[in-house]
Image 1 (spheres, rainbow, N blue to C red):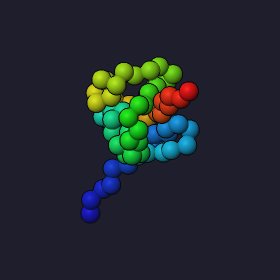
Image 2 (image 1 turned 45 degrees about the horizontal axis):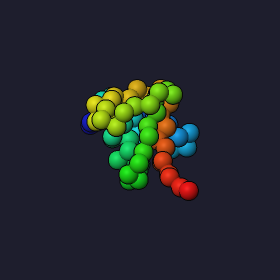
Image 3 (image 1 turned 90 degrees about the horizontal axis):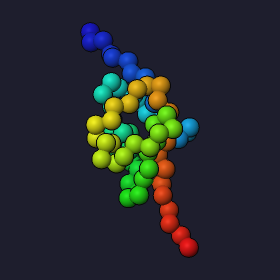
Image 4 (image 1 turned 135 degrees about the vertical axis):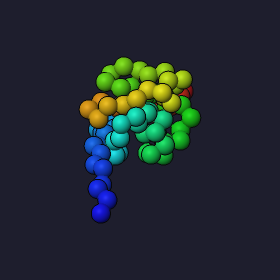
Length: 74
C-alpha cells in the first residue's frame, strides 16, 4: 500500500486555493490558476516580485500571494 504525501494549501488573492508543494514557484501558481493576461504584477508578502524571477522564486505555504491584472485605460 502506498502512502499519499500530503501537501498544504496556498491562498492566492484571498480567494483561490492551490495545492502547495515544496519548490513551488510563482510561475507554477500562475499556470495552475490559468492566469493568461499578458500584464500581471505579482506580490509576495507585500513585495513586488519581478517577472524575470517568477520561474525561480520559491513560495512557502504561509506566503501571502497576490496576482494583479494591470489594465490601461483612458
